[in-house]
Image (tube, rainbow, N blue to C red; front, side):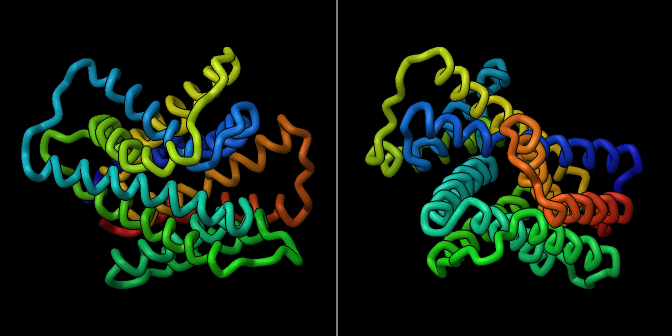
Length: 287
């Protein structure tokens, strides 16, 4: 049983991770436009730069040389690569809204089915409310749906759900920052062949380099370290639910910074999302 203080710190870390992730989509799309990069190349820069920055923050602290630590780093790296590649494949075959809604909407369901032995009322309300809010926030009536895109989005959701379940169990000597650093580097190296084939050359302009640095530092190194830190004291279902703050933050930022207008339906979806998350944080599923 976790203490109230530990639960509060974990919840704050999960909220921070979701909000920081929400800035990543905006930065990634901006980088793709400014540098003319394929989405796979953007994802690879994100992982490699994020891993490098997190490694610098370790200040020379070595990776624990145990079999458990090695297996955890390899698993996290492979799941990072799977999640990023599948998500961007879903975007390419369908659309950003459909891919995001399917991936982030399906992940809490997968985690719930895999980790909860007995469904409680608060869990059902929180997951159902999250799915409803996400649909209202991002659904576009009349938009064509690609079954290939849905398939890759579900694969991305399975990757993220597995990452959540795997990292919820700590490994001795491997803290959230170390897991983020070496996991991102491993995932970036795994994505390097397909990303390199798509072209990774970028113009050495100050604005482009600033976006690359921001994408690696804020929504990757800091966000994943906060997420893994939050999972240490929270149920995996609550961790996966916090990911829906990503599209919510992205939608609000797009409206505030890019002048995109959100419909009444979208604002209702945002309100439902916040309410569903509040239920989850207020009455979390016992670990």
